[in-house]
Image 1 (spheres, rainbow, N blue to C red):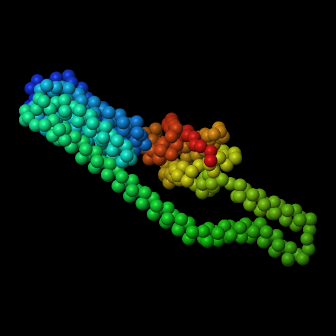
Image 2: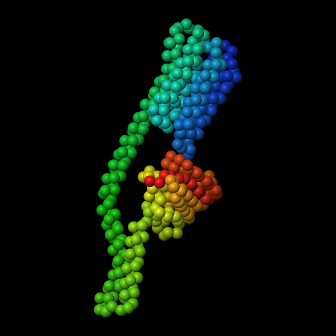
Image 3: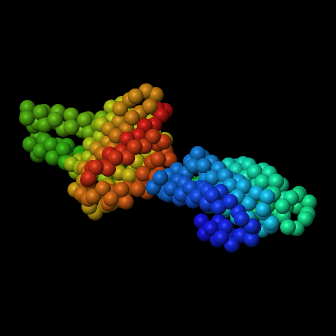
Length: 351
């Protein structure tokens, strides 16, 4: 905003159209406002539509500035429209792919070239229009190409990091598998020691089997069988809730048909992070968590409710980063905060 205002006030061009100049500045403000709102991490992702609107506002501002000095533009170096377009492209580079930035840059270059060519006859220094066009498009081209290179490099480095992280995760999982197997085995042994060993010890001491012993043996066998069936039929979401709420008093899962298994790896990771946040938050120790999934083929509709002490603002601030990730992975995410009750609604494709 400061650049167009300063250039407009200090322009040597005689009698510019102030209404068009103000309109150009307002268009820059609109483009900057859209950029600020769309790039806010709480409103992620930065969509193609938002990026197109930002570039469109920049191009319109450049055209309005050119129209404001039409027939009176003495020098190209005091025109700020091309620099503003380049700065908007540069500001959007962390959020959009390089291909889109290059397309926007080329479109902007064409528009700038047309406007500069139309203004060239009024410039104080007489030179071929081609030279003025080159000078005019240089800021847009330089900043636009630089933005595309930055975006491409950033994505490449993130992809390398993700590849490395996946490799380390797989390696860690391979190393942890024996320990998990031992833990499961120990859990089974603990269950047998609690339910079966005392019965066998009494049988050995007495040397005889009574009707009561038969009843206790059937009861122990049923309990072990029920535990094995329950654990084998438990979904990853149910297991996650047990890990977070081992006492079973702070959460409920409604997932008939194991619909949670249809989530992608990234979606599961996001849900794990959200549920994990409820267990790490000190004020959420008294919270209740409910997750319900139901089949609405070809989609699965999901509802998550978290009730915790605190105001609307505190809840939004705490979970805002998780909302940003969920909006990327579940495009139809709806967030409703009503006092201490946080409700999330979203859907995903069945796989």
